[in-house]
Image 1: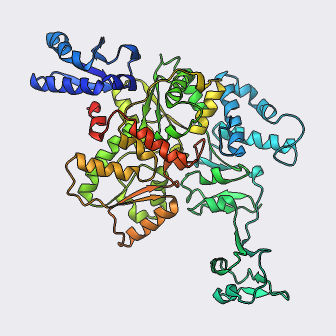
Image 2: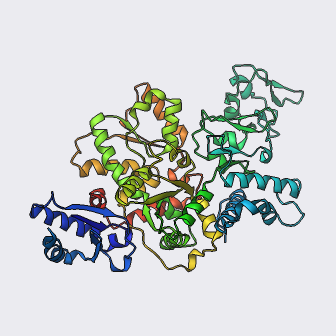
Image 3: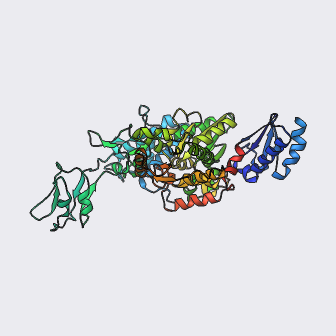
Length: 79
Length: 474
């Protein structure tokens, strides 16, 4: 599964680093490094709703503090 | 409002602007021939002997704005008819000579080239003179001057000579494309080739970023360049031109700082690889030192590589202060990542060709890099970043002893010492332009405040450490 986090300027200022770090930690904790490919991209053209994160083609709007919930409800169920 | 340092830059800009305008309107091929009449108006000459010569020179500038001579691999070209064939007599005695009794000039001249007329005023016998300049140094009246062409004076790699018609000529095998002569020639007779038409095509063919995503990678020196607008408005302006997104080359600098620090700690001695003119200078003048050039791609190429690897269907244009980048992006190892290069001068021309008034635009944001990546734009910044990167990677035990060289003369001195084995330093930060990138020939302005602007921009970075800035890239 490929999770892409927007690291464009707007999302970066809204906390994409924290989102990436939290996802990295959660992936490690859940031993999912082999199953999840986490990567970054510069801008998804949806700056107003950042931090933008996609799973495949589906786009989600995250904040650092909602990342855990996103992982639990969206990522884990797709594994 | 004044945009440029000199009227030569302004003239060059007008040509670039009109070429871009015609290209955006898809009528360049049919109507470029009309541009000289649009720029040189009326029948009174303001720059040259007559308006016909002025128009002829503008026509030559148009050729360069449209890519220049395809058979000349160099991006720095001479406009022969624009060269005023300035005098270049070397050392000469001026009217300031008082015909003194001391005759220090005569005493110091080992060649016996100084002689005196019946009024005791000094003269130089050019058959004997070797242009050492000692006489000029000792004259208490500083009456002996060195008459050099500004281009020749600007070119510290000595790539400038004159052809059989006394016009300037550039030796490509020595030229590093730093652009110093372009900026210094008071008649604008030397110009950097422009890829502005290619960039307009990239914008148009992207079809509003549907066919591919067009990224602008901007150099950190941008922070000092557009004094009539906020940086956020410049970023908005770049997007208004049709770019999909703007990314800081400084994030590439953060990435480079990390790998360069590690490489240095392993190899024990390195010269930096960020400045393409410095790298080219080593290859041409100190080939034995080339093995010490850092293996890193430049920050520009490093971040562009990342963009292309993570975003399918991306194209990247680098926007910076540098004419040598126009050579670098054509290198085999960089070409896959960078599609074109323009300067800040050319960016200003693009804005105005679309009548984009930066000062009324809403501010956009630009934030990818750390403080350290951003200060690469000025001399000393790269060394500071490598020191920080050593620390952040737990390599503080490495005895880091850098020397920051800005300007080719400082670079030459350090490289010469290093090649003889008597340079005490273990890292040469080399920047071909005085002051670093903020002194680049493609800058709109070259002012004292530019350095502090870069430092201020560095301090505004959200990420304070290099590690934090690059942590999103994994």
